[in-house]
Image 1 (cartoon, rainbow, N blue to C red):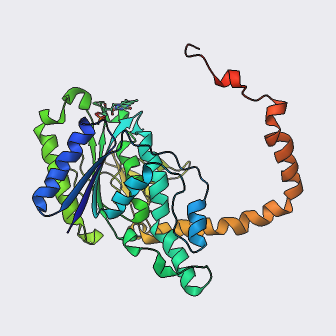
Image 2 (tube, protein in one colour; image 1 turned 135 degrees about the vertical axis):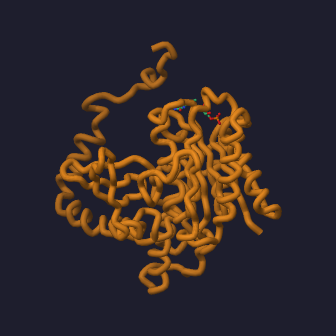
Length: 341
Ligand SMILES: Cc1cc2nc3c(=O)[nH]c(=O)nc-3n(C[C@H](O)[C@H](O)[C@H](O)COP(=O)(O)O)c2cc1C
């Protein structure tokens, strides 16, 4: 039975909830027997990743890579793991998705990086790392289908400029297949999604197609964005580019695909070599590039740090740890700032 999860980061029963629930109705129409769950995260406590490394350390020591920060995150993660298809809807707060979404990405997505986990499991198989490779539940890494809806008040795209592209960060580490990435902006003038039939129709179609995409190969899934089209990046369909300081090379900052820019008949064009598609961030090859890079950090930094240990210890003691003595610490009184400063 298909499992569909709706995740809304907006206020209870407000725009994100409405759009997410309408997409779930679309999924229900396509799959009457699907099991469908909905979570509104607004009142949940999802703290930031504290960068402690306990998760990756545990994996490398033969255990599960649990997050040690205890809050509502574990519950949300369990439902994400349960889902085959996900509809994720988040409001734009200051040009980007609300911060709680990023907390979830930092704690869920990195820990489910398909390449990084398989790297460790392969080392368990060869005996280079402790642990039983079969202990890791492989179903966690099955390829899910996902659609993203970014909800903003502003009528202009420049006030929702990093909404859809940032939502894409949720699913690429687990190589989720993205069906749609929709900018539901203009909510400040639309008033309520039910006042715009087209928007509701789009949500139904997104929900239906996202559910239908589960189990399909990426090549069989047609990207669906009836409002904004296919975008510029052929892989993640976003329209933002990093332009190199010299020359004509550009990179999609979201999926890392490289291309070259030109102007033809007054139109900006980007040529994306097909060879780049297979190393985009959401592919195994693209993720593996990063795993290999991370694995090299220790052998590069370790000798440098050891060779300079005495100097670094002295700097850390005299400048960083004794900073409060030298420059001044925040006193208890200063921490207790009056409301009207
Ligand atoms: C702190 C804050 C910042 C916001 N920043 C933006 C923004 O930069 N661009 C925008 O289009 N809307 C912005 N909004 C509007 C929300 O995206 C909009 O009200 C949305 O409908 C909220 O989702 P909800 O109705 O599901 O709670 C902001 C809202 C808040 C509370």
